[in-house]
Length: 156
Image (tube, rainbow, N blue to C red; front, side):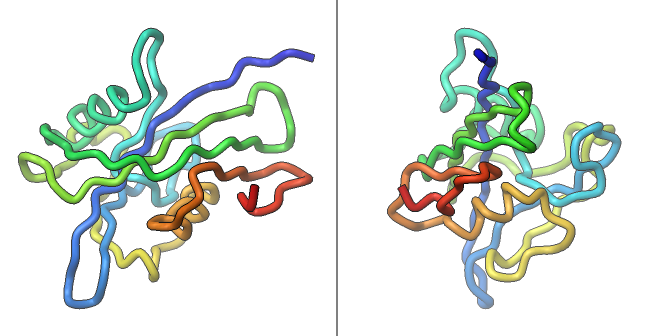
């Protein structure tokens, strides 16, 4: 059985504080997917003819109103939910510690709040695969998987 893989890019803005590393998260509101859950402040599908890197830059501008985002590639995650072909995803995760402008909610119909959170103390509920991704930031793995019956927790 063949299926279509849906690619998406995620941007985690990071900053250092007296408490440790913080990540900027958005509360999803008014969306059909994981409404009411905390997620990356900027993320979205990679469009036809676009690289994952370019999609991350575009999403940061569209969703947060920032430019010049100094992206660092973290890892790729292959994920599914229930093993249904429509849910086969490949996600590209980036972090950034430098950008131009002040992050703000540009799409209020999709985001209810932006909040800086300690990476080690995330709000709940979190989008599950994103909580998993945040727990792996800064590691050496460049491939993770999530949601498969034979998942080894990304240890491949």
